[in-house]
Image (tube, rainbow, N blue to C red):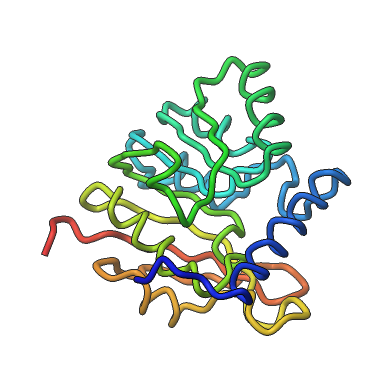
Length: 208
């Protein structure tokens, strides 16, 4: 993949960062409800719950889910692009006495963040669906590089057309194409008034 970005791509990345920073400055990020979603709870506590291991959360926001995972025995690293969110997540983890490593960085540039893995679980609550399309292959490659054999990715994403732009959103077909070496194990529609989905992907048990 070429490291050269066009002016339009740079503008798109800057616009995404600006929107995210505005949401956290105003204190109203719609994806950061302060409540751990039942889909993650089911994976961690439900029938057939995963054995705790190493987990990386992409777009961790103020740390609600990172703290939840740490309290349930997971060794947690969490990444967010927005400084304000990272500070709040660190404060939340400290108050909870949760051992969480929260890092400020770009989920599409994990080599620059310091999260070597391998990880048994990745969790993404509406991070990928807001990434400009020209950075999405890098996101997938970064997770694949850090995935333990059999690793899971649980992702919540907005569908196409949920927002007033031509590119945000995610589909099952796109994930299947971008995540080479992963199986799309489940797609469950969300309950939001706009199209949303929960996607579960699983890494091959052994390298091909």
